[in-house]
Length: 214
Image (cartoon, rainbow, N blue to C red; front, side, top):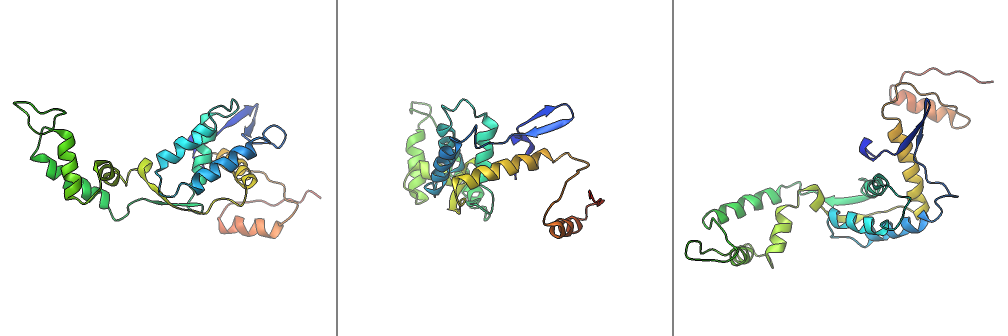
């Protein structure tokens, strides 16, 4: 599901037209969809920020692709049923931050180059911390310290979509869904699956009125 910030729409009088990718105008988007799916499929272990950057690079030269559309693709590729990220629910990152900050307190202030007043060089101290904490280098420590930050969450699993067309279809549906967020009244015409529609209306406890058009 998209958020309001990712909605693309136009207003035509009293009508709202959600952004829709058509087979005639956006046929070439199938190639883009295939590439972004590959970014995530091959991106196990990478951070969200890295994945998002890779997707933006794919659309860099596409003139008909506003930023919200790119971000919407990323959002749909990261739905809970599609992808699983390490969000550090055990709060290991927060515990590591506290440990590192406590270790660093005795060396404050850190400087780029030591002199007569300040003797603790930043790079040397950071490397010492990495060794004491059993990390290969400071970059690994820093990554682990902020693993609970959204942009630094790492991709664990990616189920993906059945095909590039399926991703594009999901995008079209998602834009219609977000366009309905502020709707207070909805009129729909049902020509099939009538029983299913009524069942879901009742399950959602929506007030409804049924009128035959025949």
